Image (cartoon, rainbow, N blue to C red):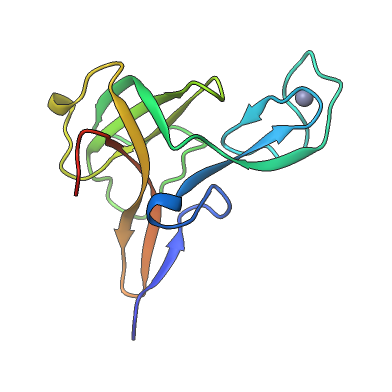
Length: 148
Ligand SMILES: [Zn+2]
């Protein structure tokens, strides 16, 4: 039996390899972009409300902040309370075009000692954890100076 790849959250990211992108939504009226995606109504208080359409976010951004994560990230970043929390490096990445900060794990092997505020990173597909049947996929940030 082969393992299935399942996103930890449906609809937050799509694609493989260089086509992998986070998915947000954008208001057609005021062009505000939301991630995690907002599908009900525009949250811009100055906007009368427009239709929200799915939009891929920029692949690259710059490190706004980072930390060693010894505990679970806060809502809305979903973790499975049944699983032990594995410490990792968390990065908050500023996406210039969207004018927002997106939190995520660094790729395995990257520690806080490898990072600096302002460093360019790109989003790549990653594995949050595996169980008997499923590989749970997520997004991770990788410094663009690092190649596989
Ligand atoms: Zn709006």
